[in-house]
Image (cartoon, rainbow, N blue to C red; front, side, top):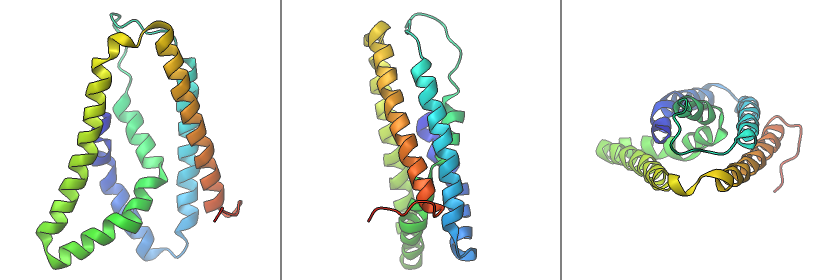
Length: 170
């Protein structure tokens, strides 16, 4: 389900990005606030990963609400906004002016590969579930929690740079 998150969240992101780009002079502050909120949420996900206990592959468990968490992460991440502001929207607009089918092909190919690669990873991980139990699972979740924490710190740094608190590195 997480693989389809960009399909759900990107349309509003594209619309907001276009609105921001065309009507607001200083969209850095808006991106900074969104990035800061995203950093907080990713830090929360890191915390949850550190708290994870051993996994019993045969046990019935509550649904992880992956889709809703994925939607929140994608909506609060600056990356879709930056992509659509700087790369995606200009390509689609130019392609639409030349050949509308090319614009459609770009969007279809983009989401086909994006969602397809995520589905492939999910299938591979799902098929390896029996190997990830007990201590190995806990260690993996803590390592992933550490990566999430690192990404959270980087997002905080980016947010502070976008908000003008830090001078970005060149």
